[in-house]
Image 1 (cartoon, rainbow, N blue to C red):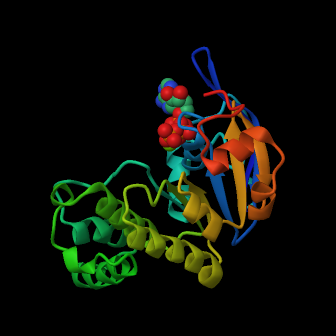
Image 2: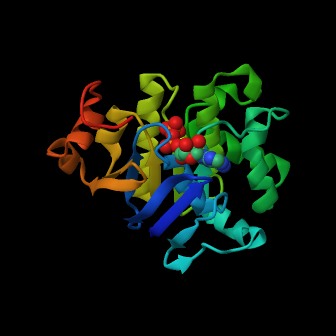
Length: 247
Ligand SMILES: Nc1ncnc2c1ncn2[C@@H]1O[C@H](COP(=O)(O)OP(=O)(O)OP(=O)(O)O)[C@@H](O)[C@H]1O
Ligand SMILES: [Mg+2]
């Protein structure tokens, strides 16, 4: 279970999040949507201690992790993996070496064991055929798939995907969607997915929360979003240029 309780966060005079509360049950997939700059990435970064709130609490399985020290966050980051919006692969290592790294470091695997396991994780995102290439040789979408493979190596209980299908072709995007669904259905992984991808949102989400002007505008099911009478939510999910939304 992931819980944000009354989170507020400002940068200078800019109030990015105002009293945001959200709860994701075990095995559930919550999508977070909202305009660019709405605070989606800021919100999820609280889960791995990269951002501390000005007010409120962050809980994982009921444990308050808000004020843990950097060192205390190490074990939390093993249970709660984050796939960042922008690539965080090491450029000096091949793709398979990037995926091997956490297996060598935290699972005590030999080079050979880690190599074999890493290929298995790359297969899950259909990237095993590029194992020996380097991050700089491939595009953003492919790097993102490798980052997903790396995030899964430590069998996390929670996975945060920040725009996992942005920059992916439709087939690769559908594959990532299926993977997110499988992690939830087969391994009980609890996920938060930040996304602009309407197709992905309406195929995979168990629940959707929309952030607008620092607050949760709507937290509901796909049907709640489809059938909403709220003008702002309606404009957003239909992608309409005209409407009440303040950009
Ligand atoms: N470390 C930081 N210091 C100062 N301002 C920040 C910092 N991180 C984020 N912001 C600001 O907070 C606001 C929300 O940023 P955030 O990255 O969460 O948006 P987002 O909803 O993820 O947008 P996008 O869809 O473009 O990724 C933006 O105005 C951004 O400039
Ligand atoms: Mg973002």
